[in-house]
Image (cartoon, rainbow, N blue to C red; front, side):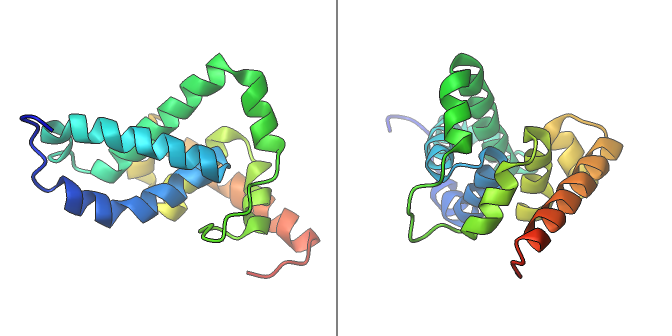
Length: 162
């Protein structure tokens, strides 16, 4: 990659990929879409690596880029994405989230999914999540509470135990 400073990128990629993938799946609720978004986000990360490697939360940078790409795609193709969100995931043997849980997550509003991605999957605290998403800490707490309550209610109705 002519002249690009890749020092440390490969290690960062290997260390962060699984967590970022889970976070993006939770945020967008579609494994194949998450994979595409994450590939593009990592490509942009590599292009900006000299800047990103000094970022205090480089994994959050990648996830945020992926989420922004998703939002941009959604705005351009609302009807197509709506059908993706309501469709069942492709049979993926290595799906890192239980299918019943993923189906329940799909029913949540986008902002609740985003908060789940950062707070639960990436294990960010409330302040880090608020900073990453550009929202107030109280909003993070509210969305997390509503999301977890909705998931508990839905999963207990299905009598699924995790």
